[in-house]
Length: 145
Image (tube, rainbow, N blue to C red; front, side):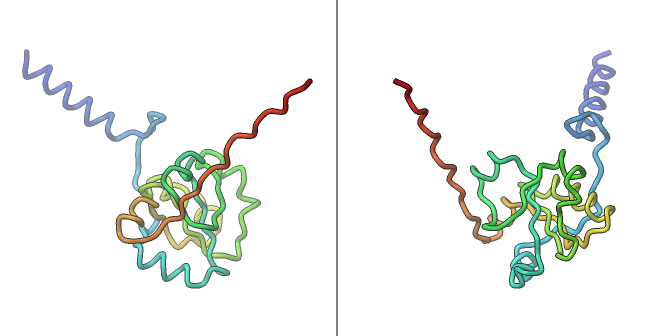
């Protein structure tokens, strides 16, 4: 009986490990995972590249990112496809490239030219330099007299 319970627990843990946060089956992205060297080479032509950062604003401010990027969270990406220029090669960015990979797949299916996905933390771990973004202090509310 103990073996059966143990097998069920292990099977359940494995099954839940194969799903995303919404309970859907997780799948690998078809996007190329870009290295720091590949990203740096693409950034040598900034007028031809667009970085689409699909992280939350708090992740960008706490982890850092690239000085120029388009911020669209992964859940909103399909709503804003019309606002993304098609004349540039796109790098999708998340913390470790998982969401970036999903974003790259969405953009590729929509006809965009996507170089690949990248992780900001992976890029930094490989020696790349991220820009730290310091949010402005909250505005003091005006006192009425």
